[in-house]
Length: 398
Ligand code: PMP
Image (cartoon, rainbow, N blue to C red; front, side, top):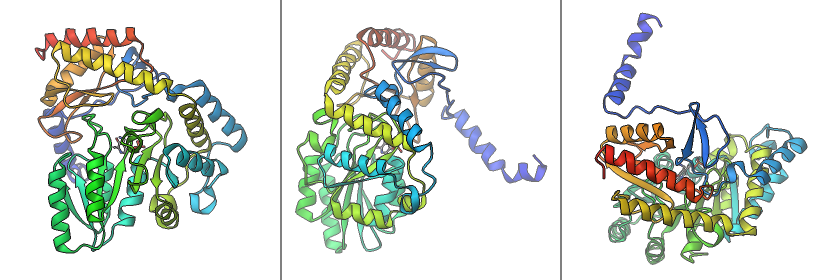
């Protein structure tokens, strides 16, 4: 780089230095095998406690077959955005099948869950409207809110009394439309939003309700139908955001809910209009995932069995695993450096469990997040538990 360029980008040197010094610089590991309970990471075979592959669909034979067959029939790329020439019959079929699975009026399939949030929030909520958001909502919701010209208010995490106060303030100010947005399952803590109370408040104040079900799908509800099904709130939640990259094992996202909302999104949602459609193999694999989920609850049941076992054992050993109610198991450590050190030691012991620090979680709340999967056998879980016990004692966490 020329001296001039170096000077121009000096601020980035400083920012990176700060990250390194505070233990917040992420070392990105490389996976060299298919997804599963055991994977090869940076050349080492390790127990996988990091993936969102809740049900093991990411490398399921039926999914692979569906993707290969779609390539044979349609090729690899959509070659256009959905509104020009990118809508395949596969996309429409997926939307129809997802709507049936989620028990909603309609679905719009998009490229990712991240995009789904960008599609909905700024489009529906304009100047003169108000968005009320849980303080721990996912980054993709926060960014969607930032793109909107509506006013915004934050309520304390999962606190329905605080939400009521925000709604009361909104009423005083006379906003045109009010939308409440919450994660269904909070991805870093694994706790579940108090959706029944949120819906009741929304109904009382005439607010639109949107829930991001990324970590609830394939996990909560009958056969993994998600948080709305879990609480029996069908028809009372206006918008559900879904991802096809976690329990569904592929990549993609969707918006599920009232037909009129989906119709409007098809006309105007920017990621739908201005970014290419998902590929034929991805879309076909997602269809296969719906088949698998509709056929049997076996994988979801196994996921929960594994979750209950692992969490009970971790608690018994004395780890602080927070308020999680789902397979997401945060091992609370506090300082980012400790979390990084523990993750590195676990890796040496053959366990891949990633440290998570600021800005993904607040400063001083660093943790290791263990993701339980239906692919783990009892022996796998025991292997992981032994490693946690050994390293936990060594670092005086327990
Ligand atoms: N919302 C939530 C709550 C998430 O946890 C995630 C994934 N980290 C997303 C949205 C984004 O989903 P995707 O990976 O499909 O973009």
